[in-house]
Amino acid sequence: MKKIIVGSLALGAALFLSGAAFAADGAAIYKSKCAACHGADGQGTAMAPAFKGSEYMKTAKDAEISEVITKGREGAAKKYKQFALGMPKQTLAEDEVKAVTDHLRTLAAK
Image 1 (cartoon, rainbow, N blue to C red):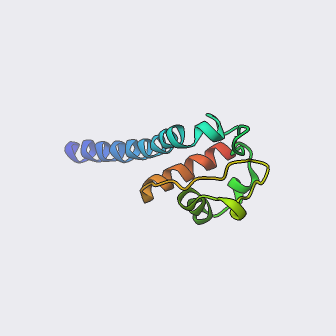
Image 2: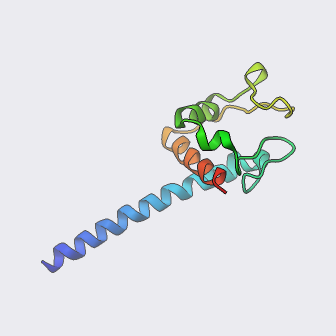
């Protein structure tokens, strides 16, 4: 019985830690791919809009955000015309896009 309890606790801890690692991956990917334009804390810069407090990021569907990440927004597709540069498409795995999307929602909630 003691082995079952210990095993269950170990499994639970592993699942919890893998979820935390997943969230950390989104932050790490953001830092390496997005922060230069959107700001370290999602506050925006002269190059790209803020995620912090963004209504779009709070209300857009995951699929919409994923599409912007993977396809970018250039030319006529640009949402924010006041920025000279468009959003370049990013080459990320599906789980990485999900992690970044989750991280963006965290930034938007601030």
